[in-house]
Length: 226
Image (cartoon, rainbow, N blue to C red):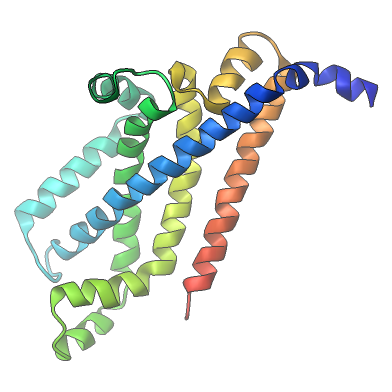
């Protein structure tokens, strides 16, 4: 046991910091996932229903939405962080810390989630939509009572995939001052040559990914009535 205590000496010395960094990572992922879902799910629905041959085909709107989504998905996250720094400073007065990182995390993940939601909804059998239309359902009722319920297991899986991506994004953000486990791994683990810190922060990031994946899989099975 002594060699374990000796190897993890830096972790034990900075244990409060490890707990704080874990909390900051969870805060960044959960809050940004919530707002990314608020933006990404409606955007994914709009991408489907405004596309040619679908319920409300509006070519110009579909083109604008598709272009915006593609632009944000094309920008590497580490570059997006730099572009969003002025927005963070303008809105909350700083570009440092977990809350400042939320803006880039949301902008980086919402378009990604929108495309996944779009794919999930396109997999809904068109026969089900036609049956609802034949019974007199309007577009809003079809979206609310047919499209989203039928695609819900796939949408939850999409949110789960996005949450896993956000754990990685949060680690990137930590390198330039967002805090969290990524920041601790880089500043103490890598730059200060504290191998035990680097190992423990890596293990914690893996455990967080496993946690989100397990919750997402459970929820997806729970709502899947097929």
